[in-house]
Length: 259
Image 1 (cartoon, rainbow, N blue to C red):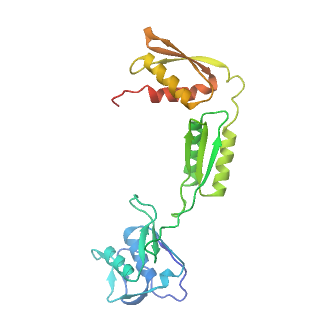
Image 2 (image 1 turned 120 degrees about the vertical axis):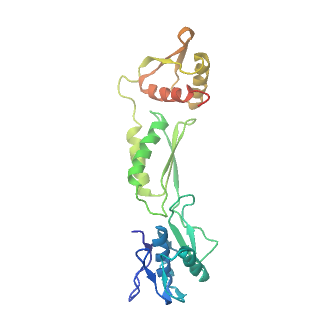
């Protein structure tokens, strides 16, 4: 059940709306009753600007059943008549939580990001980011409406991972996970191996140039590419632990141009 986040009302005898068949009584009622009614109708959470905002009295001329067509608009009109605005906390979502405020120019107080740029020494930034996103998906599955999900962006040019996080505790966890993943390769895997790549679209000569440029832009351990035109194949000499990153890059480059 979606409910309004309000302060406790001592001695409040008016029941909060719980379903679409609930009735808001007539008379002078707290704004929290109207906020809860709107929350029930829209199935969206409402967070108040300050704890006593829901105590503001509103005048209800006659009882109002939530199932009445257009009730949602009526409730918004009542709130605005008393200077209370409902603002979506995250725009663009079909069911966003809303912030109840008396300041029409204010924005919901979303948590602020702390940004860290971490240089990766031994592995490619992209799989590190994927690992961190998977961990964040578990830890941030039920964060509060005013919180923000963490972001992980690979910077291929500098070989870094850019982390944006609002929680010091979560950030500490992500940094520890990153440090554990950024380890030297297992003994023996740093030795060069020869890998074949059969070009799927276009000419291997063009793919070789694209791969060389993309890998140079990425930076890091150099690779050696040999073109075998008769078979339209690339022969790539690369340290074994680097091959997955090269393979990922080839998957991106060797695509149908019409796709």
